[in-house]
Length: 166
Image (cartoon, rainbow, N blue to C red; front, side, top):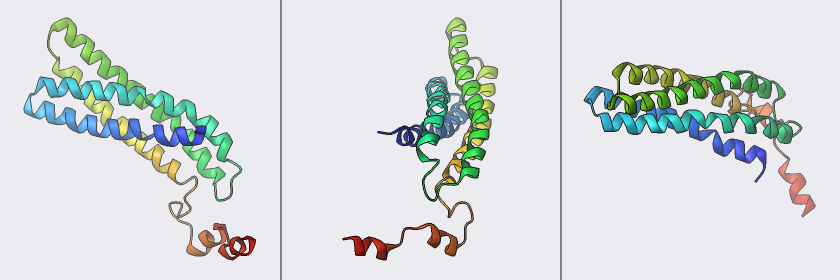
């Protein structure tokens, strides 16, 4: 498995984990289910902190794909620039979730303001990571970059050349 493959596999964890964790946390707050809130805080902690692994695999992934045909250098740079903000959002959310759980251990129950603060961080981090993921998708998908059909056809390998080689 290459670093590029690992980066693509890992990047789904913080994105989907934060989205589902935030939704579950909002539900737990709405219904006043402390067990649901604790479970969602655990999910948010894991998902948020997994952004570290995604960020650390980004540079090695870039080294592998930057010279490939159809890969946009500008898209790589845009993705990389926003990636640090996604990392910070994930870290803040993950640490906030851990803090809320830790504070709950001291007080023997969750403290509502810590849960609400973590939910706010999770929503912001979901947006940041979602935007970063969108930029990442544009690296090797010309259809996401708004490329015209003729441009995409020019970037695609010529099928007749492959048939002649066989």
